Amino acid sequence: MNYSSETFTIGKLAKAAGVNVETIRFYQRRGLLPEPDRIHGNIRKYSAADFARLRFIKSAQYLGFSLDEVAALLRLEDGTHCDEARALAEEKLAGVRAKLVDLHKIEAVLSRLVTDCCTAQATITCPLIAALQRA
Amino acid sequence: MNYSSETFTIGKLAKAAGVNVETIRFYQRRGLLPEPDRIHGNIRKYSAADFARLRFIKSAQYLGFSLDEVAALLRLEDGTHCDEARALAEEKLAGVRAKLVDLHKIEAVLSRLVTDCCTAQATITCPLIAALQRA
DNA sequence: CTTAATGCCGTACTTAAGTACGGAGTCAAG
DNA sequence: CTTGACTCCGTACTTAAGTACGGCATTAAG
Image (tube, rainbow over all chains, first blue to last red; front, side, top):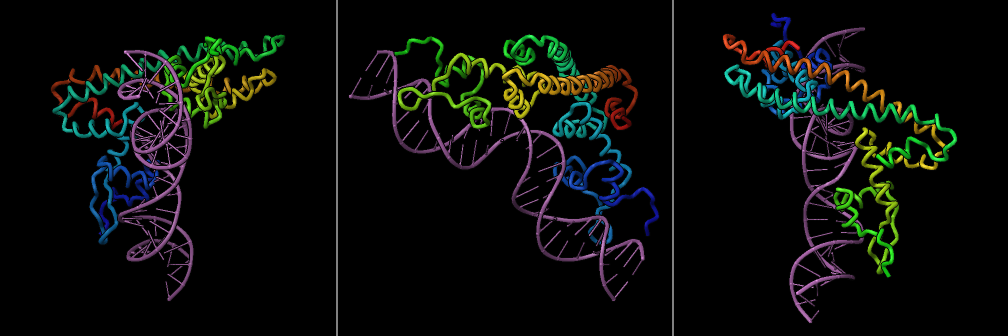
């Protein structure tokens, strides 16, 4: 009966994608994954397409898209809404660049703090904490 | 009676520090701010020191410290635990640098996605979404 | 045939960092 | 002396993205 090697139970899919079983059920409730066919009465049967979709979700998430945004992206999946997808991506990109600017500043402050700390042994208060109080 | 210009009500302090009144009460419950003296029976009276401490919390938070870590930092305030403060900062710094690496990668992917999108009008599917599916 | 592993389901819990709410008391200005 | 703005308190709610739980059914292995 099981002529296709490309079907997964929920457990297999979870393991393959490196996520928790509950996460898949959760994505289903959120509408990010379609309710799959069932076999043997009640067991969810996933296809390679489901696996790809799960990977898509995880990639987009890594790129900073929230699950709501991923859902939006998935709704544009037919390729006729290129502009909208692009707008979403541009927004994300702007956010990422802003975050980069901030993180570079933070890195500078933190690394200065770390080098200052304990070089000035004479001072009574920790220079790191003192600096933070002035920051 | 009010001979000091350096006292705040909770509302004034909140406004001065740019936070919500409830946030101050919340920080008090978390032990990040001391319970202040009360005047007129029951009104919290804050000092410039409280204001400084609040600024400290917000700076540290901006640098990526969680409230728990801020609390730890504040416990080291006497300056005799420079090493520990430094260790915390070094940990944060490592985290920030890792995040920077990731964000740079993400920026590259996203900006390529954005430029690819809609340049290849011939394709049926949106290149952005297709790329994400392969990512 | 039995037992351990899965699967199913709905519901509740988690974490972080606040925000909001409702009712009561108080204070300063007009 | 009243009105509107603060303040007090404890409790409950919020958001995001899951995770965990408990009870029951099914299934694969030994």
